[in-house]
Amino acid sequence: MFNPFRSKPDLIVHSETPYNAEPPLDRLRARMRTAQPDFYVRSHGTIPHLNAATHRLRVGGRVGTPLDLSMAELRQRFPGRSVTAVMQCAGNRRADMQPVRPTSGDPWAPGAIGNAEWTGIALADVLRAAGAETDAALHVAFDACDEVEMPNEGRFTYGASIPMAKAMAPEVLLAFAMNGEPLAPEHGFPLRVVAPGFAGVRSPKWLAAVTVQDRPSNNHMQQRDYKLLPPHVTEDTVDWKQGLTIYDMPLNSAICEPAPHAWLPAGTTTLRGYAVATARAVMRVDVSIDGGRTWQQAELEHDADAPWSWTLWTATVHLPKGEHELAVRAWDSAGQTQPALPDDTWNFKGYLSAAWHRVHVSAG
Ligand SMILES: Nc1nc2c(c(=O)[nH]1)N[C@H]1C(S)=C(S)[C@@H](COP(=O)(O)O)O[C@H]1N2
Ligand SMILES: [Mo]
Image 1 (cartoon, rainbow, N blue to C red):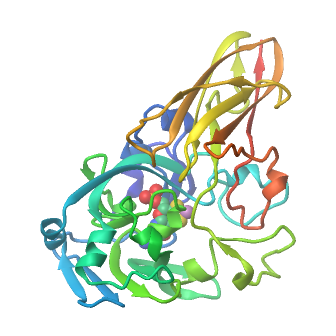
Image 2: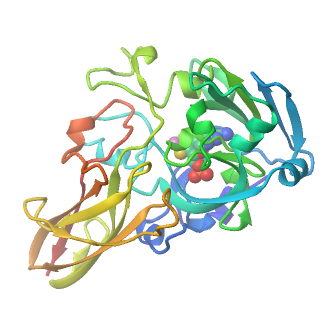
């Protein structure tokens, strides 16, 4: 039996079955590209053990020529592409929303995110080869191989979809490698979707089928999960049809160092973290040592050739003796910033938690 824990040493494990874990934040912040052992895992069901020699991808639906291709044929027929991009869960930072009111789902800290160089082929090239209709009203649905079991749903295989306009965008890959290594089993070996800028749920791992269709996927993951609902809606009153399907992720940022409740010597301290703007760019990051009453600017580190990558930031601050509430907020290229409080965007699923990230420390 495959043991995901050996390849993922010392992650914070939220659940063993299905396997859900995130890295400690100092390890996450240590590199521009997140190494596989440090990369969070979000699974909803089994972790299939697939054989690359026999795995096949089917492409069908509203296409002129349905395809059924081996991994070798995918590599031979289509030009290789690499894109450095963030993968993040719509539930990243959910733990910050839970003190407002409880939510469903695992209490993710800011570690349900990673930045990797993904290598594979462009989904658009595969759709063109199949002679797919590409009308903007269409959707591209993905079927995976893992089995998910949910109360009231029984067992089903994972699936999700993205709108055609995104599917045809050059950054969307069918990936077989991550940072130059084959995907690990828990990250979707041998083939996964990578839809940069979108919530992770739209990037199915263990990809088996691509279908062009006139509506979003009928899968549970698309229809009755990963939707944003207004604050009065609860698990008992939810009408999923009223929810906003989560595709693009919002502007977000987090303090990765120091850790919450750290004790630090008074004086000069370096704060480190990440910021992510998905389809826009991070233009500025502000940090505060007094809970957001005053701010100073962080230094940004960003790879100009990697627009889907995150931005790492560093700020040197002076901490007097005493208790401090550190805070961070990012600004994007549209001059937008993050909400101040998790109360502003609370929803019962705890999605899109993107308020100023606050960390309490003491200096002495
Ligand atoms: N087949 C399949 N794909 C999946 C999932 C899953 O459970 N099964 N989880 C999704 C979610 S919600 C996220 S956040 C990302 C996580 O990717 P990672 O585990 O490689 O970090 O995978 C997505 N793709
Ligand atoms: Mo997710």
